Image 1: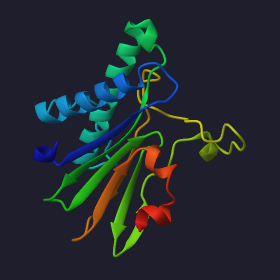
Image 2: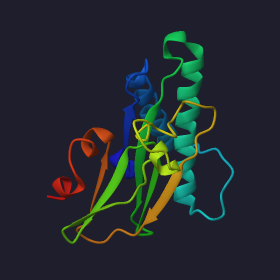
Image 3: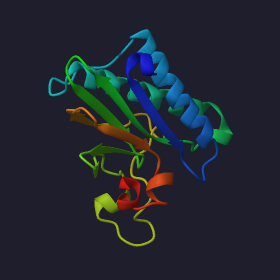
Length: 177
């Protein structure tokens, strides 16, 4: 949604029925909320208004995916990871909301930095074959915990929103290159 300076990447969870459906629902719900300006939620005084609004849009997407999953047996376990950026040029900020292992990187002065932290079992201390499993995703429960990052863009910065399809195929050094 470039007219609203909002960008979203949603990656339906592999192995579960309806991952593609979940990602479409999530993106379209965020678009609807942002375009209509109908944000619903309790303001978090520790977050700027634009950050609260992005979190509320992602929470609305979670509710929509969860509702669709409950309504159709074949989509019962569908979900999606999600990363979204909302730029506020007047405040010179970018708000980055994410759930799961879709990522946001910032490329500044020829250096790539991962801004988000993957929500996987590895982050909870699990090792071995299950460490890469998700600990959070949009739509798998009635509420989603959304992480919000507030960054201050500089001229010539580039932000990369991507799914794990990129980060599992390339190292950060390869992405930086």
